[in-house]
Amino acid sequence: MATDVAVGRARRFKTIPAGPHLLAASVFFGSWELYGHLGNPLLLPPVSAVVAGLFEITFGGPLLPALFSSLQLLFVGFGTALLVGTLLGILIGRYQLANRVFGPFLNAMYATPDIALLPLILLWFGFGMTGRVVVVFLAAFFPIMINTYAGVRDAPRELLEVASSFGVDTEVGRLRRVILPAALPLIMAGYRLGIGRAVVGMAVAEVYLRLGGLGTLIVQYGAAFRTDLLIASILPLPLLGVGLTKVFERIENRFQYWRKL
Amino acid sequence: MTGTAAVVQPKIALRDIRKTFRWTAKGKEHVVPALGGVDFDIRPNEFLTVIGPSGCGKTTLLRILANLATPDTGSVLIDGQEVTKPGPERAMVFQAFGLFPWKTVLDNVTFPLTLRKMPEKEAKDRAREQLKRVGLEHFESSHPHQLSGGMQQRVGLARALVTEPDILLMDEPFGAIDAQTREFMQEELMKIWADTNKTVVFITHDLDEAVLLSDRILVLSRGPGTVRRVVDVDLPRPRWEYDVRSHATFATVRHDIWQLLRGDLQAQTEEEARGGH
Image (cartoon, rainbow over all chains, first blue to last red):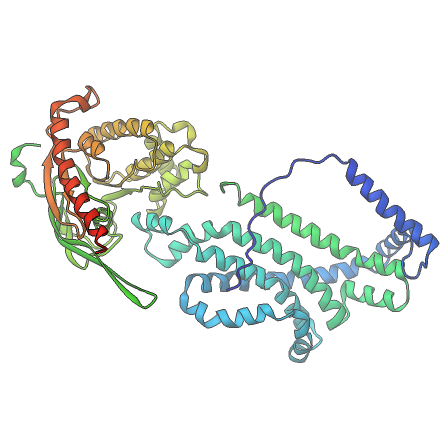
């Protein structure tokens, strides 16, 4: 199986004073604003125009309904990936036979760029919700599956023996008492990586598969050369990605406390 | 322990236990005989230590006793009944402590009880009782990694005691603990044993530890392990009330076993030098 497993990033950095941050931000946004006024606003409108545009499409505009529709897609796709990824990860991490059977296919699929599969997905699943869900699913599935696999595969043998000596004698018992609790930090790290990639998958599905949600706004404003609104409608994507990743990082850290750091 | 022990039914009877490990690596077959027919009776309430050169199969023997491994031939009888899977009458203490790092100290100790579906409150009460016995009542909500090795092993001991087993199986339990703490733990274990009257089977490679703790010492021969000799340790108890290490018997027993082990060690070194291993 692939080896790029994410480990928890539980180590906390010391709080860095805000000064450098503010400086960097003002240089960045300052030069952006300046270019917007001096250069071609069609290529890059000033940041003030983007912010104004963001207000325009948020309040009474199309942004919130579009975001809501995108989130539905995101959660259906990610939820499916979470379920299937975890189950399959457990299966191939625990059973050599399952690993032999599924491993090569999963590796091949992992190595295939999702974007190359889009025409196929379109062909198989059509323009409906299913096709879009499949794209989000594929994006989020692999980090979840690979991390679960790695966590389950490295189940601590000594603790399995401890459990067995106290009378745990079923596979369900071993999973519940030892294997899954031990793998939980890795599994949660997989969810964190998965949600970030699910946001990317969502945008790809909505722009390239069938217009919907935020994708509609992005494509329409792009076609209308409304660069200010275009950037304003792209903005929710990184915010969503970073925000959701942070939420999962929080949850992940709750399962990390017992790890020796 | 008097000389009439022969009429008492053994607590644990080992009948012709043999075990050979076989595996194939890189097309080469490996065969390592670990136990070559161990026949032995362990008396009720005795403190028995198993000692022997490394690779003599002492840990394998204990794992067979715990039904964590199956012998190729032979059987383990407890109170005259053959046992084939781990049971509540035995509890094991592990060399690397074997605590669940994600559980608190208290939850580690209640673990064997929750497996038996004991109500939570009763399980916690019992666990606290055992934690008090090992002096850790103020650490119940700590996690194992916050404790020193000695404290972790006391949790392991409390967990083994919580189900009130007749038999404690201890696999080099103090091997990973620093020397000073070890001495303290040995004394604590002797006190617990005196209090609870359990049958203890204790694996060690530490000769002083064996003499200090045991009623009898089972010396295994170099692998494949068989019973080389059984040595009685007639030192008065309680042994924490006097300087047992300077007792004449301590020195004699220690010396006897040392000679046995040294002979094995020499033979082993020579064999390895000839490339016979």
